[in-house]
Image (cartoon, rainbow, N blue to C red):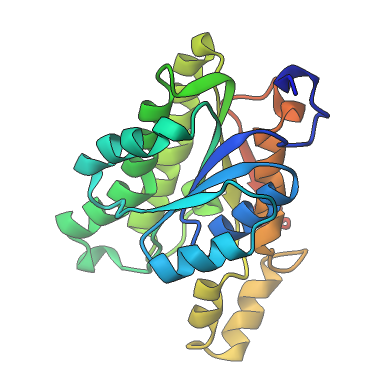
Amino acid sequence: MNQNHLPPFTLDGKNIIITGASSGIGKACAIECSKVGAKLLLIGRNKARLENSISLLHGSGHFYLILDLSNTNEIVEIIKLTIQDFKPIHGFIHCAGIENTIPLQFMNEKKYSDFFNINVIAGFEIAKCISKKPYYIDGLSIVFISSVMGFLGQEGKIAYSASKGALIAGAKSMAIEMVKKSIRVNTISPAIIETEMVKNMFANIPSSSIETIKKLHPMGFGKPEDIAFACIYLLSNAAKWITGTNLIVDGGYSAK
């Protein structure tokens, strides 16, 4: 079907790449995108988890790539080889990321590099690769998963906040640069989402602390699919006039 004549909210017939697809938001994005017709290339580090993600997808033709995104020097060449049979690319979601609470006095150059390599540079390098012909099709939509910490401060989140803020700022500039190629670039900024990582974090703090954090979210904590649905919107033709935007999906966290 001609992509221009698809129903606005479907991803039917679209080829989508998702990093961080072995768990959390990335896994939810993969499952929900497959439900609305996308064919997926999932990227992650853990083979067993990627295979589990693949097993939960609807439709056929999906596959995965085991790739360490911290090694930014190898990303472009590996991606180029992988997508030879997966082009044209219609969409890309960069969900891969690391999060940790580290006070400034314990930060060092290596820790800053770790945050930026995965949270920012890896996504930008993949975007650079797929934004070249013959890999993409006009209307390519790129979505970077940022965070409300990219524009709000929190103690011990200096490196994480800096990397997520860099995603927002960089995506805006990328959007302006890519518009001449008919490529859209946006970010999504969630607050706390109930992923495995967050549940593990909550298991190690008092219940009173969890309640305090929850009160900061007027609508409660989000679910991974809440972010997946926002991604589907930005990837779909329904968002064809949206670029350079940071979509805040935080249950009211930043409105207080």
